[in-house]
Amino acid sequence: MRKRIRRHQVRLGMFVEELEGGASEAALRRGFLLSTATEVDRVRNSKVISVLINVQKGCDIAASSRDAPTFAQSAFTITAAENKAVTQTIDQTKHLLAGVFTDARLSGTVALDRAQDAVEKIASAVEHNPIALIGISRLKKKDEYTFLHSIAVSGLMVHFGRWLKLDERTVQILGLSGLLHDIGKLLLPKGLLNKAERLDEQEIAQIRTHTRRGYDLLRANGNVPETVLDVCLHHHEHVDGGGYPDRLRGEQLSMPVRIASICDVYDAMTTLRPYKRAWSPAETIQMMYGSKGHFDRALLSEFVASLEPFLKQKSQHP
Image (cartoon, rainbow, N blue to C red; front, top):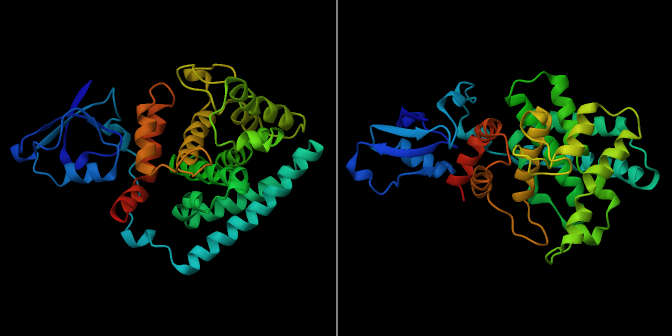
């Protein structure tokens, strides 16, 4: 389905079929996904009269009905004091989570109260300075990846939940789900998780057991919310049924699971790992839009919208 819009209405995630009017804009190609803030700005600042978009290949203008807050560029300038405060929050949360993970690995018990304390710190940091915490990937070290990835995914899920205007109790549970989604990896050999060489089929199958291991560990505690269990078990499922462990599809996947899938992949791809470079936010978004059948497209469009001010700033300050 195609729709004609004004050039100022374009946004990340739209698929442009044709740019109408403004012959001098021939260099702006036809049939492309607006996957970077630079491309969006180029269309908005061009001389084209209207834009023909395909809402089956990209997001619709209706996805903009929940308008993003209008931020001044200065709102994303992180002062030394703000940076120090966020870094302290990350350090405090990391220590809390380290205790939770150590207990889980050694005794098979999950200190849910400490995990919830960690989520409260993350939620507070996201509320006051979401961009600083979402940019946590630059702080990741090899031996801290599991801790910091969990914190980052928790922060992304809290941020996204608030963007979607979910109630705060639901947002807190999303944050807890993000914090514990990879807890099953604690039961896998460290050498396997950090291996720089290509994994063989047996090793891939072993890593994929982390979802079931984590689910069983959390379920055994008896007091973990069902949403957290669901996210832990199913965050690697795809909307087309191509994921694991249960090959669920479409509406079989709960909204928290679909949110977790997006946040997990976004943080993983923008992080430096022993076996890959860190992708830029723009590259990651482009890859995610290109992964047909993996993500809920409507939620992915909303996720991109929630980060759009950050992506725009990054494009202007490489």
